[in-house]
Length: 418
Ligand SMILES: [Zn+2]
Image 1 (tube, rainbow, N blue to C red):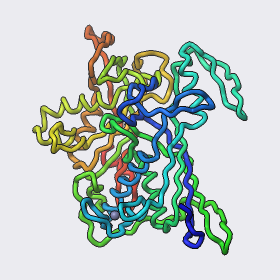
Image 2 (image 1 turned 90 degrees about the horizontal axis):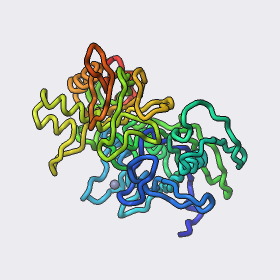
Image 3 (image 1 turned 120 degrees about the horizontal axis):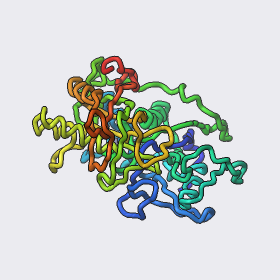
């Protein structure tokens, strides 16, 4: 469709990188991708003659839309709710509806060039040389240490490219705030989120604006900070369901709270084949989020009734909702040259407490702060201490916690839970 130049007001181009912090699962079928046991969609690259995972633009756009919807509803701004037809709400104005076309185009996120090369070496498991890409050529890099280099696979990185036409300042602001929700760990990409998949960071965002200047199109780079926060409506009624950020207008430790924790391994940690996924992600052993959640559920069954267990950890019932607690894998930021996590290793994980009450969050965190044995389907040999065999002993420490509030999307609430 050819747009007449008269109707052109502006065009924004958003670019950046999406870095997966935990495995990505998109699509149901497709070849299993060797880097994580979860299947992902693959895209053929003719130049490199290889298949690479990608994030379909439609998937990312879908996440962005529901993320922006949740923000807007929490501010008390009315948007259309199916099956009602849209009366030109802000969300449909940006993302489109049956009545109107989308003004945002999210391109398929292809794997970044640096990430691609690493994936290629992964196809050759005994090839231990490493290379840097310099000016289009691979340059040999000396082996940096004694570990088996082919086992270390850096995180997946994808190129982000979004174009938006004729958006107002508040609309482009909302889009940027929506993207930032990935960094706040409240937005996730792909499936298996309640099992800890799809945590991602959006890095290096740039925003360019094309403007009509007389009859010429002028391009300028925008300062991301120049865009304004949203204004709240007079009447804010936010429920505890996931369409809202609950209690975002108050200053209490209730609501949608995300925590970043370090996990100290007090003993060796070994897990094999839990929940159809292997013990490692990209060759790095992790404690799967699903295993940590399984541990919590099992312990709280003794304290909470079934209705509350279902409410917090998710229900199998047809009318049940997803888990309020979302736990990422606990992973090491250093290379672990082993198929076990050695004692004294420090791992990192995120736990999202989605629209939860202060008391329940505190109960969960205080259990995690104790030294516990986290077991999945364990086959661990452990070690002996005082005549007893001890294994998979871990202790969590709260590093930071933040809450979604209307005044501050990343309100530091570490002190409430520390
Ligand atoms: Zn609408």
